[in-house]
Picture 1 (cartoon, rainbow, N blue to C red):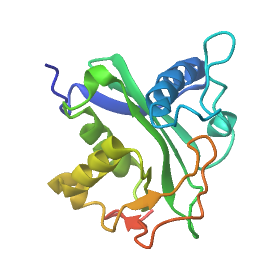
Picture 2 (tube, rainbow, N blue to C red; picture 1 turned 180 degrees about the vertical axis):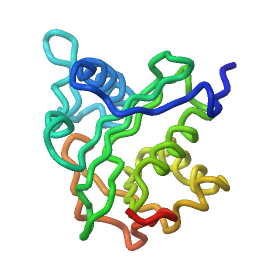
Picture 3 (cartoon, one colour; picture 1 turned 120 degrees about the vertical axis):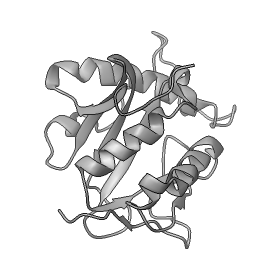
Length: 188
């Protein structure tokens, strides 16, 4: 089993020519996410080519200030991605984890923990992390990450559950009464 550590796992900002890597990884992320959609839903369906629709707003990650596409690698092999931005679900300026995906091969071996550790160190400030209530695995991941000493020291607050009638059409204004607006230890 691969174990992530400081030397084997890393996260870095994506260059423009690497956009196709993010686009392809998004297809896997959407596929994983589609299991949370109900069978009678018309959302998250394959198109006639066997692909999902392009991720809405992806172009913003290459042209809007504060939007950052990140690739995760383990021993130089592509392992996942994160899309972070400064579009707060609540109010004020905060970093937001819009998408976070680790390939199944690299799950439960510390890659997510190391990736979050690197992202928080690279982008200190206020953070929001909203998790879809039906996504039990993601809720557990973020709860456990907050409990780790190195991440718990950098992030305080309560993780919010985002209520969504459909995974393809979120209602971001329906946070639970337990919002997360966390602050990392360093100022911007």
